[in-house]
Length: 265
Image (cartoon, rainbow, N blue to C red; front, side, top):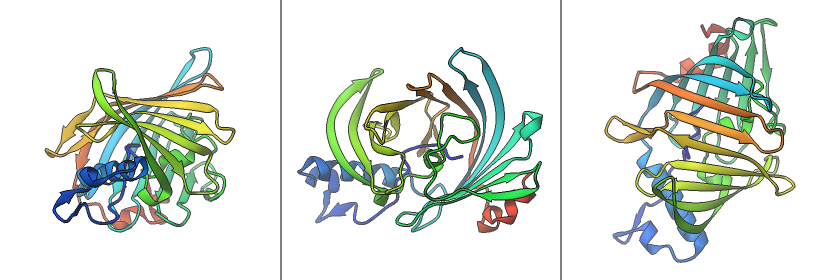
């Protein structure tokens, strides 16, 4: 599981002829892309990240169930991130592990290890709109958001929860995406998302994800403490409470190979 930030990879020049890309942008599409590139520039160089979180699942009647998860993420130069999530509780899913390789132009690769079956299950590349482990997050949501995966359009700048935000429309280029568009409120200071609205294949508002409690690490990287997604169709919700963020811990590709799923403890 990633931190679900608007993690966008560097795709070219941030500055052209000495002028910031954002200042040069003219059309709404150019400005949207320029903002996305700036967001990437500010969140590049963390190398690797570990964190732990509590996932709270809530049904339409308000009944809750909780899961404890550890995450590891590796920044990959020139491609999408690699991420490993390990479930520590409850007991019936302890040891379940999820591995994801995000790519920019080709389908992501994702695997789920089910300890009860002692089996690794590959998630189909054209069926990532399904729910992840009973939550309101889909498998598609767990990928780092590579810039080539979307087209962009700047809509407006407005205040949300007392903070100024760029409002950007993103349309997935991936033909099997479960979404037709995502509307993102991106903080103009942190260049991190405050809210994302997800529209389904029928172009209806499916769910809303909000972020809060941002803290800065290593003097550069902003990460949320809380994330909450509400499914407007099912009335279910999922909250994520993050803690213990650590960066540059020395993780390598070997920590994210297929065998790492079975080694996960």
